[in-house]
Length: 294
Image (cartoon, rainbow, N blue to C red; front, side, top):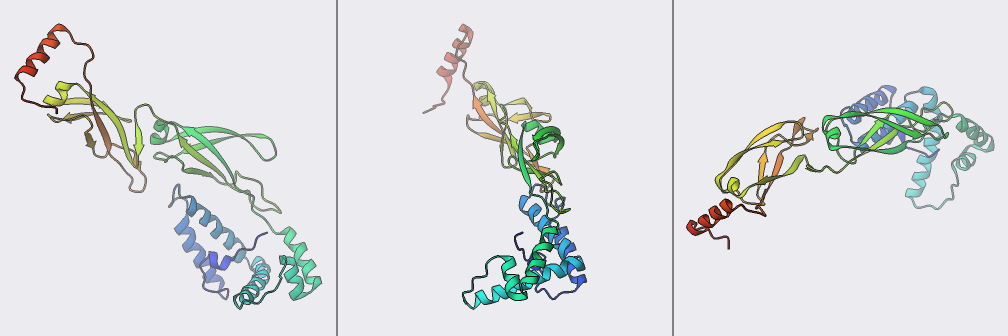
């Protein structure tokens, strides 16, 4: 099992600390990195797991004593390396044999085999629609376990989840060893392309098509947003390529519990075929208008 400095993980200045100091450090960091406070933050989730792992060891008098014996060896090793003395330490059990003798080395190897080891984490992915990401949803996922069996689970996708974010399912990973807890299962969310909307940051973008006279004269247009209908005022003289911004009608911003904006990209559509009356009106407009496009 790879050595970890649990004192550093709990941000303790030294290994000579009281049980109360260990407990206080754990409570402070567990609150800081808790998944409920940092939804979708993978780095915080990993830190939270490390903090729990460290406290599982240092919070128990028995396991702390076992750990401190290993920790002290690494502390001696680091001290010697700092002075640039070259010593071939070999593996963990070899170091214990060098310091405490072969009998203690054998005892360590036997005890280490029985230490609880948390199982490895697993990762999978799931495709969802933009609407499912916006409103939140519950999905069924079937996957094959490490034993080869098929397992069906239900996943709650929170509203406002972003493309590439992960949903953590606690204790759904590989089984632990020697009584250790199972690892976690991380489901990576991939939002499928939408025919109408595009997400940019926390804004929703869509095209708004207008006739030449609507753009020239101004109009009021009913727009079907992702969750509601909106009446949009298009000012006179609006040009193709302009963007109209409708505040607080975009995608969810989970950090502020608000929403981004809805961005309407203006596209002025010209009729490909004209009736005789329409053609005559356009010709009259051309004759009387002072507008120059070039």
